[in-house]
Length: 575
Figure 1 (cartoon, helix red, strand yellow):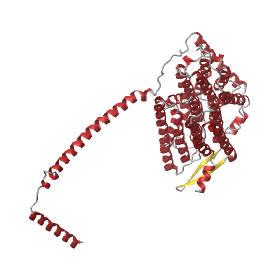
Figure 2 (cartoon, one colour):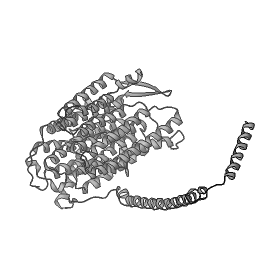
Figure 3 (tube, one colour):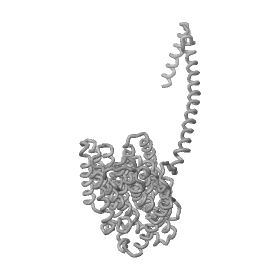
Figure 4 (cartoon, one colour):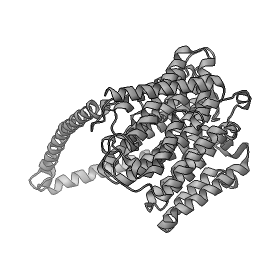
């Protein structure tokens, strides 16, 4: 029992989790201040731990490592703490206890996942992340959000079930619960079933192609702060897990490239700008997945760090506009630069950074991935990543600020963002620019220090390559706008692969429910008919008019008494 409590106290995620439950007993106006204080305690605990393994437990004869701080887990843990602080400041004054609880408990679960040194601990925090995050989807309290939350929860639980199956299969094969590199194939090149099941579990949470719709379905239906928090943690926990278990897996290269490409086309025609940013999540995670496949773990971890900051900044800026106008539709926004200039400027910083403009955080991290594809001599992969980078500029770097603050004039003249929102966005923007100009502190956190030692982002080659890419992408956007070939922003619902489970899937479920109901009615009719026939037979024998109810002669009863006594004597003799 002492070892158990020591393991708990060694985990920064436990500090955040306990702090989240305390929120229910605090006055509402103190919740955000408490969240900042608890986050500070967790960060201090992480710093004092240093690199190493902590919180060892022995369960059923197996050793579990509940906390492992190494260079890979550390960079994710650091940026998770930064993200929590930004979210708390952005949501300052929020009085909803369920959201305040999830604002700590959900990041705590993801933090616990990246610090897990064994698969059992990973599974526990994996499921905690699913359960706590759904409260952010349900927060608006409408039927639409309830249904979206149930779909979201079903998919996340499916990921957890697959993970548990993968854990069991891995233990049967290896006799260990260690969470380390496992690879998708064995020494003979055959796919390992245990690894494949684990791969699918991580793939669902990473939003692999055809498994991605839960992001667009759930995230935009959350609250302003809820969407920001959701956009950060779940997919990054999955990216970390892939980087830990499947580095250098060739299949991830092509899965990642597809992930970077297909969201671009959906984002270009989408009217809801929060959904545009959700497609951007798919695109950005694709770069990280591709980097893991290439074995460029520095690129995956560094870009995950940067994406949490600059994509979070874009979500914050759009959330501020939505807070003031009540909408995130491109057709209902525009012209806000006149009264929201600070939010506009901060949004442009995020847009430049996600587009990897020189001098920003995106530039000093995305180059690691594209260089990795070039060094591997994968021309088509390299070309696909360049095309996807141009697409990022089109849909996230230009479309978000352009249709939110410029484009047509919506006639709305709202005030600029509230002060807490401005402070959070200002800190994020400062990180985007500061680490973009001087990336050494970030590079010092990257897992592979030997590989990063010779990397210099501001070489002539990198600058010319990126500026050419950005210039041609901006020129293409301008021409498409001028000749009116750019997809018009119209109120609409765009179909994605979720159509298969929303339309034919719903019809199939309705048919299955109807068939089950008819089968049950038929079987119940047969059963109830047989029961009624049996009861009628019993009644005919034992009822008032039945055979057993008539008078019996005294001699007949005496005969039966003698038979029973004889039977008792025989049994007694045998015994």
